[in-house]
Length: 135
Image 1 (spheres, helix red, strand yellow):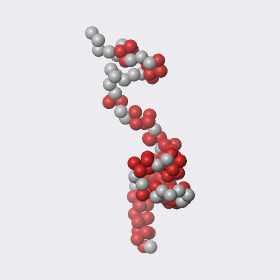
Image 2 (image 1 turned 180 degrees about the vertical axis):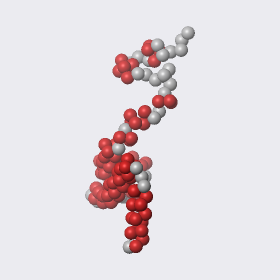
Image 3 (image 1 turned 90 degrees about the horizontal axis):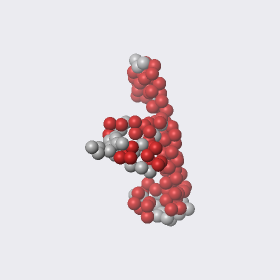
Image 4 (image 1 turned 135 degrees about the vertical axis):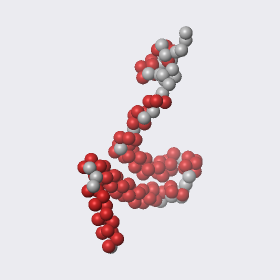
């Protein structure tokens, strides 16, 4: 018990030394960890319940390849809790969106091979937009 108190005191002392913005980030991170811990407690139970009607092993014992070989209805039973948790992550954490990922890859884009959104919709190639290196 005294170890817990010492840990909490050390955490509070360090937290108080941080600027308010960083304190808020620490709080949000702690809330994220609590949420994840609760989800992990729920996932094995839900997975077991969804598999109790079937003859397959619990999802945690199956590889992705084994799951892929199952009928679609069985796959859904096994993966449903994980899909819900993943979808929740994408709704909760904007850094997981494709736009966030794409924003970080701007330096990797080669304009000669990249089609604009308009080009994609109209179906023409980069050279049709004047992006070709024809001299």
